[in-house]
Image (cartoon, rainbow, N blue to C red; front, side, top):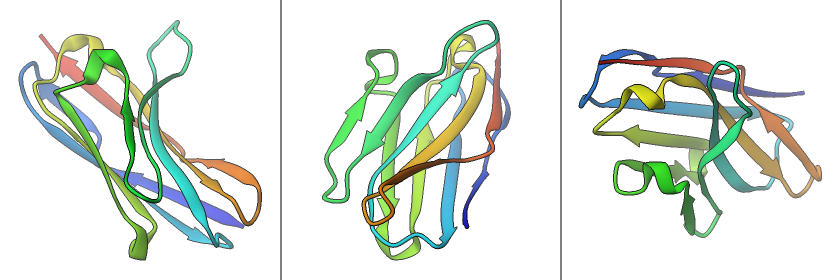
Amino acid sequence: QVQLVESGGGLVQAGGSLGLSCAASGRIFSISVMGWYRQAPGKQRELVAQITNIGSTNYADSVKGRFTISRDNAKNTVYLQMNSLKPEDTAVYYCYVYDTYNRAGYWGQGTQVTVSS
């Protein structure tokens, strides 16, 4: 079994900051990609940011310059620092990891981020 535990969501005013974290545990052996997705009401889930095991990053255009993804390989943990938040960033944020040993991807349970105007 693999568990992903997310933390750090909440309510913030526009222009504010929040940090998310996601720790993977259990039968997980070789994480390659770690990432964050989000899903707003009535919309499809979309990629926010991802980071490889060698530190290469990729961001959605809508968050470039405002969000920063990072990871701690020793702790199997991925982070998302969100600055200059906008109301359109409001969504449920999900972390995702891909384990190359298990050849499987895993999702967190989701954490709500709400940005008020």
